Amino acid sequence: MKEQSYRKSERITNHSRYRTIYNQGVWRSSQHFTTITCSNAQEARRLGITVTKKTGNAVRRNRVKRLIREFFRLNKALFPAEHDVVVMAKRIMPPLTYQEACKELTELFTRKANI
Image 1 (cartoon, rainbow, N blue to C red):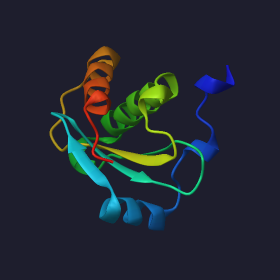
Image 2 (cartoon, rainbow, N blue to C red):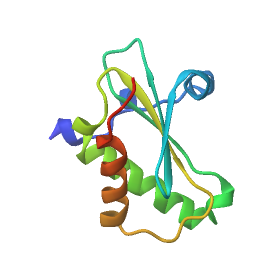
Image 3 (spheres, helix red, strand yellow):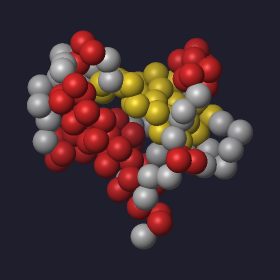
């Protein structure tokens, strides 16, 4: 069951690391999400989530973050090993179900990456 958890070691928590990922990472976009992927020194997949106030009120922002975390928790194999991934929600986003978000994120991560 631990493989399906979302531990602190799998989170990007440092603001300077976010800046490094933004500057050096590979950007990919879909209709509602943008991902930035950058290699890291650790041997773990790590996830960062960015949802701005332009996405909506706190309830909507928290819902989007929960959807992304759940997708990461259940689909870690789609995320590249030894890489940091930041998932950003785009500005105009309708209320998505988990199935819709999962489908879009799966397509985004299964595209051929130029890493």
